Image (cartoon, rainbow, N blue to C red; front, top):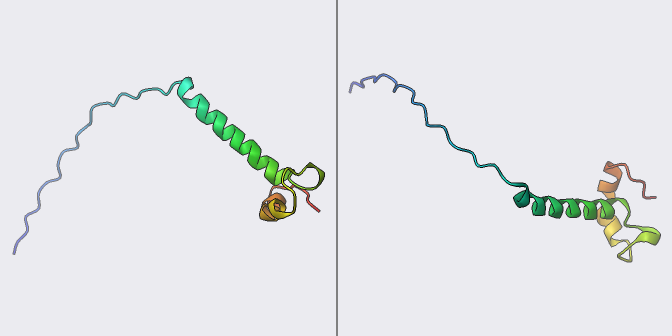
Length: 76
């Protein structure tokens, strides 16, 4: 069986796609949500222990212990 080799198709150019900009009003709620989420995470990793603890006990401290050392927070 012989296979014939066909020449490669000529490259075609696609028409330019219009990009719709995202407004600040659409991004602001998401930015606020993730900002608050990061502050809560920073609190739990960096300050949740001892006298300033929101949750009593050592549970939160043990869950974030390695992350605390990785980020350079002292804990004991």
